Image (cartoon, rainbow, N blue to C red; front, top):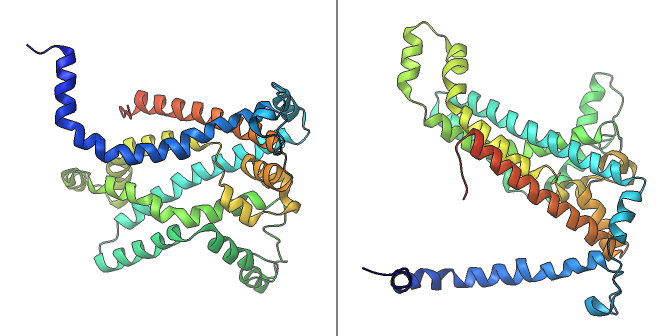
Length: 304
């Protein structure tokens, strides 16, 4: 009978090619993901590039105290949560509705053509999408010219605190709803067709089939994806906001990531930016753990 040590050696002899194959990926992850974590010490220092990590004086939690003493920091956190939650909510609702509508189409060619068209924006970078919508949504853009036909005064969508949040959420949903609907379309394909036949025998029309067969069939997928999305509640979309915001909408559009970018790279306040980034990372990690716990509890899905 083999001992535990003998079993380990036997397993290593049998599986060493697999470990050898993943070794480069492990090294790359260690170099680019774990080694830079040493730089978190900046958050506890009055960091000066000329003195480096070792020579810069330690200040303890002074930067964290300074963060919460800033008059606009609570507003930044509020902006982050509001924009992120709106994106999560509409980013789930619109793909579900689109998948349900697309599932009702029986013309295969038309269905595939629509799928292809709505997937394409996902593959465009925010530099391209942001530039396009800055022109479209300007006061002299296509949208305001169209609204002007009905006597509507020009609206500064990206320069008004009243409209900025709704605008960035709408653009984000437009860019991603086609791609996000793929999983729901796959879930719809897994519903037993016998259920639809039974519902039809009972006299159910299309709407009742959707309400009593389709939605319950994809409900576990909806719960799973919605719960996992909670882990991104502090990620309001740095690239999009950076491309589309301006100083006029800082009050409603400035988020944690853009604040870190401005304070760290533009204003060279490295310690302040590192403290904010570290706090966001810790809170994000806790939210990911909490979301996985919710998923394991309510949808029987486990990552580990």
